[in-house]
Picture 1: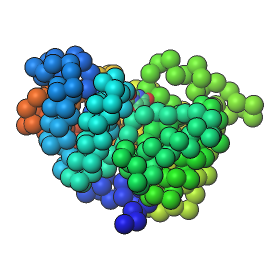
Picture 2 (picture 1 turned 180 degrees about the vertical axis):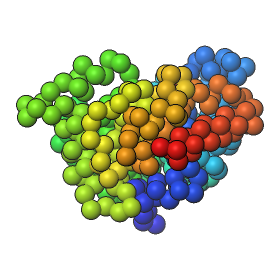
Picture 3 (picture 1 turned 120 degrees about the vertical axis):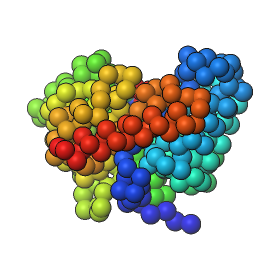
Picture 4 (picture 1 turned 90 degrees about the vertical axis):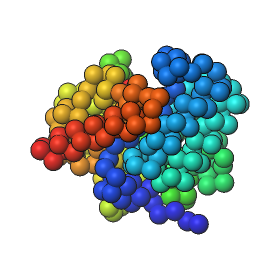
Length: 279
Ligand SMILES: O=C(O)c1cc(=O)[nH]c(=O)n1[C@@H]1O[C@H](COP(=O)(O)O)[C@@H](O)[C@H]1O
């Protein structure tokens, strides 16, 4: 079955479920605080609990691959199952893998996450453009074929990112703006929303770049990193309607009960709605 383009599927999910993305980041400390062991059984239980609690209600679930990879092949098996179950329950899955490599190797990453026949096929994947935007071409092409999306790092939420991302390119633009302009070109003409998204931290104050890329804007950094939904209008300005605010620990720390996770997600969703509608 051919999928509709990711941008259209995401727009629909944001409109019907609200724009919140919840990250699945099984930190060792979270497993412990849930009363689980930091082992494969704990990982499996944690992941299943989050998917069962939230996949039928949030627009996007974003598993962070590193927390699964640290358990080797058995961790990847848990990740595969989570992707399948989350998608079956109606959530879009954004694989947070932040891949970036030379184009020919990027082709293998694209085959991993963006080929419909891959066991790890996801609705979208995070990638880094800092080996040059053109190095992402295999991922952009594979996503277009399968109806998937690609979220490209632009301005990340961590303070260390600025020394690279705010640096000035040869033509005077910041590197982040250069990347955003590439994304805008990829999304030109797409409706209702392009399938190439940008990652822009909610922690940045005023992003200070042109965010009119006609694509979704993933905004991590809410909760544990200190940003709140009320910060979104100042960071994103006119583009706030395209923002997918993302929270991991801020929701996950309310487990292990499904009701605690759902209530935390609902609180963030309410705050986001208030912040975006009041902007
Ligand atoms: O791509 C991301 O999701 C991402 C980009 C970014 O700029 N900052 C950032 O924190 N993230 C991810 O978002 C999640 C944030 O987790 P919390 O701080 O627990 O909400 C982690 O999985 C990060 O890897």
